[in-house]
Length: 164
Image (cartoon, rainbow, N blue to C red; front, side, top):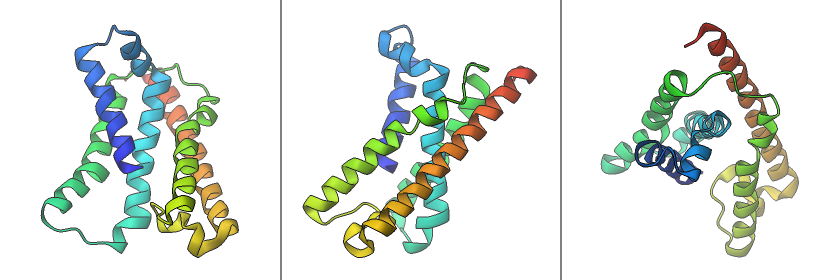
């Protein structure tokens, strides 16, 4: 999820720079897409720092990459979203639509894990946890996405009133 989401951030910024008026540039520049990207990169940071950071200790270049992907990019994207994304367009229905990307990732990960025995995260490892625990964990993750999505929408509405 870290790599895919950082790739989405990079593609979004690339189109902001080279082709804002292209069809894909306009799509990526839409506040609902920018809000979704913010949600995804914030979840990457939160899951890493709250759940995964204590299970490994990278050194050298791995540490630099780890800090960049899980801390620097999320903070910079949050600042970008606060100061440069158009305000007031987000709807509460976005919090449900924003589940499409993580659901695709989860389905992909479960299928890949079933075929290879390799799961990207220990809390999704069906082989060790079983389906009941894995799906409970996924339920918590999806609830977190919805809750954070609603928070982003509320912040958008507050910032729209303040014209930030």
